[in-house]
Length: 337
Image (cartoon, rainbow, N blue to C red; front, side, top):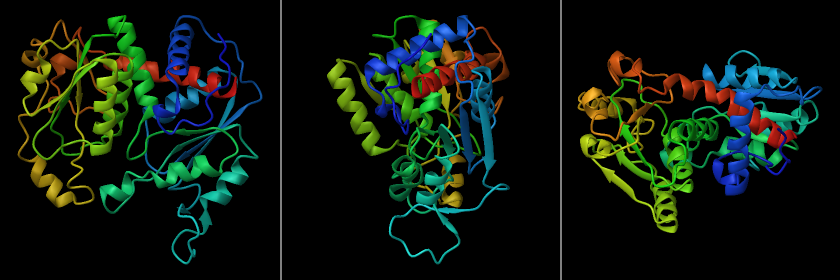
């Protein structure tokens, strides 16, 4: 259970070739069946969180430790300060240090850097540039892993692909349907962006259902359309969640924020207030082909999805969460092996 080091950084799964992605997924399954040898003994992972985390932090730290390595976990709220990402800027603002310097120094302490950037303010067009995580990748001398930026969540997509393969076997030709769900605290579209592209790369058909005004990133959807065409697969969008669930093998429930209302919480709350009927219940799942339920969590019970569905036999909720551990072990071995 080893993997050659062929991945330098993981800002998005687009940084990984189809061949390497397949190897990481195969290794993930192997590691779930058989405990790995402590092959990262003497290696150290630095983890920097500019936002809160539950599953990502715990699963990543556990993965490092179970492989025999050590982790250093820093939280921007308590352990260090704001960092500047823009190149060539006169640093007369709040940030006392540039990512260029922080990355250079930390690269001399640790073997890999895993980073969850702060939520970018301003417009979506500015936020989608993922300036912070890309600056880390540019200046670090060790592999950099994106633990969720505005645009991408590659670690969640890896675990989701692993879960899909476990549940469905061969993914080619299977139907994955994303259904937007109502929530007072919508998440970033990053997990959905990442899995749409990843699922299409695996030959799945993809449908996306959401209310008016909750369109996903235009460039990501353009990439998805090109992928679907190259694979001979279907990529469909609709404002009818029942239509999206029809014939689906997996229904992926997820609430994401409106890009059109980005950084405007008042307008966003007003739009969400008109979407209370958007939930994934038993009747919706029944439209699928023995459909399974997936959700990246955290999930608002009995709002996004009822207890009966979340705790039912069709739910893959906890398998997804567990597979964060195994897929991240495989990724670490691929980066540091």
